[in-house]
Amino acid sequence: MRVLGMMSGTSLDGIDVALVEFARDPEDSATLQARLLHLGEEPWPEETRQALRAVLPPAPADVATWNRLHAAVGEAFAAAAAAVLPVHGGADLVATHGQTLHHDVRPDGSVNATLQIGDASRIAEATGLPVLHDLRSADVAAGGQGAPLAPLLDQLLLGDRPERTAVLNIGGISNVSVLGGEAQHADVIAGDLGPGNALLDAAIHAATGLPADHDAALARTGTVDAAALTTLLGDPFYALPLPRSTGREHFDGPYVRHLLGAEALAALSLPDLLATLTELTAVTITRPLRDLGIDRVVASGGGIRNPLLRERLAAQLGTVPLLDADELGIPADAKEALLIALLGYLGAHGLPGTLRRADGTSHTGARAPRVLGTLTPPHGLRDLMPDSTERHPVGRLEIVPGTGKAD
Image (cartoon, rainbow, N blue to C red; front, side):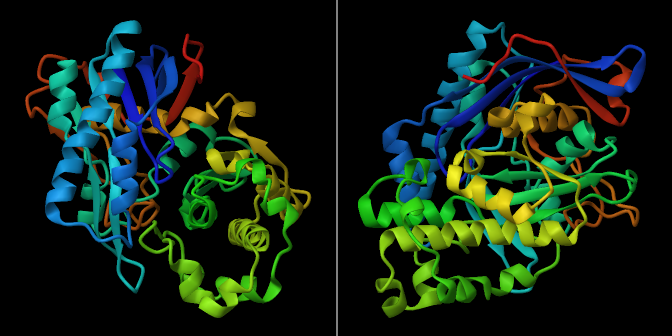
């Protein structure tokens, strides 16, 4: 089964796309083979990107704006799919994460609702394919966080390794899956850790209009303000147990001003602020990891390309090695799109998209693992008729040689 997975994160850098051919290993039906046919990134239409940035919290937006954005995001994802599929031989299914606009976390850390937009009907219309979408709502309805979803992929790829591994993703928000090691069959520990690029990008954009501090050029010239860092680390979010989730609703543009106060923030130069926020990200990632007894960290996401953040992570991890996912044969720049394609395959075959813990609950905190996604049109998969082995639980994912490579 060929699945086109599409993903856009909070950074709005682009639409990540992975075309993956899934097949069961003929010798072991519990092993799912993933042949990577295409990995790449398609650009956002600039008008749509700016419109999305304009409505992200805490910016106000009315229902008409969100309605129009739902259509525009659907058109952007449809264009991304239409650009890739004819060149690489088509697909059986499109799986799309859409664009998160709001992730509503209650004060106690539980999730009330989550909203990803992007009209799936427009993608189906452009491609002629069934589209699996709305990948988080079923988990939230069952009492889960709806995030992170990556632990399923991480467990299938790395859960049988002898090292206790923290699989780290640094996007706008940082998240982790801790798995493997001597306790290979123990529950995966997963959740959001805190800000990844979100606060850094917000600070540089507010001061200069630039989307990011490229290569940490300004942050590297600054000095960490110890008092400001201590204040920021006092956020009660960091005391919540895993699993937990968050988003730009919490780590938004005014977040630093709210915690530090206008006077203290004004006293910081931009380089010092960026250096302090880089240290905040590094500390809030490494502090919980050290407590979990890990042997190594396998990292992906845009944040790992920040050289200063990488240096600070390595320094605070000490003797624990910090590896790129690519070093283990996992496409770091397309890992989330691969995840979405996998969730599409699982959803199409009625298989859960989250991991079961020993007590029967999901790794997200839901009452039980749930099949994720909504299908458009509802009859879209009736002609595929997978054989019975396709409905067996997947115990391992094996990436086999293909033509796909990150662009």
